[in-house]
Picture 1: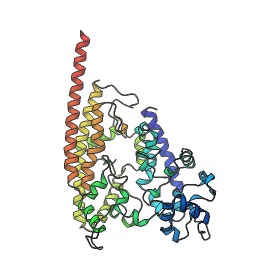
Picture 2: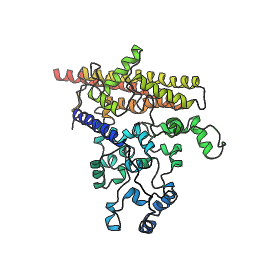
Picture 3: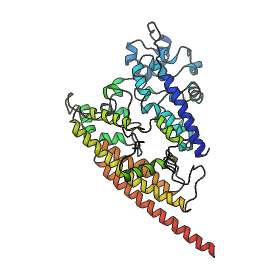
Picture 4: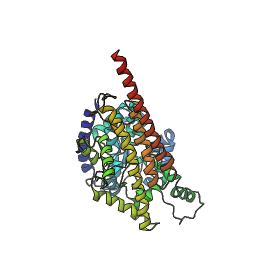
Length: 437
């Protein structure tokens, strides 16, 4: 399937997702009557087969409130020969009791993890065990609502556990609120070269104080912000930020130079066409909550963060610090846009031929980690790894990431792209000379 078809499928998926989200956020009534205690058959069998599961459930708030095995897994499974009849608790199951949290979750970016993963064209180039099997991208991109067909497909493939959502933070079967409130709960997904936000936080002053507080080196009343303090203030499960993971937004800057760089990046993402007009993919990314599409929406999220920061700092200090992150996005945009234009010129003068599946003879950042040539491979590293280090490191109050893993690395990327471009043109010229003879 070429890139155009994948992007078209992506837009259709977004339309489906919007309808699914609207349906999933409708009120679900809790079944009347007291929930029964777990059957002795469940406990006697699983205490031998899976004692850890039983132990976690017994220690949970669920067990104390009478939420039993049948509540989440149904009553069809009764013996070792019909284990496939046990259902896996999905988000609708949790919503029966936790409607507020589910509604918040459905309006935030985490709910979009599942469809956004499958919407990236290169996602489908990975081995299925990494995607559907969860041993790679799918391990974190299982978040979000799924319809009955998707549930059935996962279960048929023996991947029923991939259909759940809430347990990514509230590990089954304890489903602990305390566990999910600790910064370590975020570490599994928010790490690695493309979004190393946990490590940025952990080695910042905020993270250092949080770890010291956990081991008792600081008193319980000490100020020590966790990930949840800033991103889930008041227990909200929405989790949104002004700039998002990739530091792009539709309300462009009023500064002409920065605006031109932003347009170049959005074109390489496929959100704008070569004339600077929104594409179908633009609407798809907007529906996936990948960026803020209005100045009002961006400002709303920025004001929320300033309010969060104001628990420990003055509002003016918080505003100034966040604006420093904005400035680093501008600096990183200038470097990335220059790299994009260098590669774009290689396509323009015919030094690089448009790869099969590319919608245009132009760098395609959504090709992700499957670059068709060395120049774009370095460009993708610049976009996915080093640019996020620059601005996300700043927003997470970590001085090391912006300079050494961000700015310095981006300059190195740009130098390598320039060198590769020069070498490719030299090879082309030499080949042309040979062809004359």
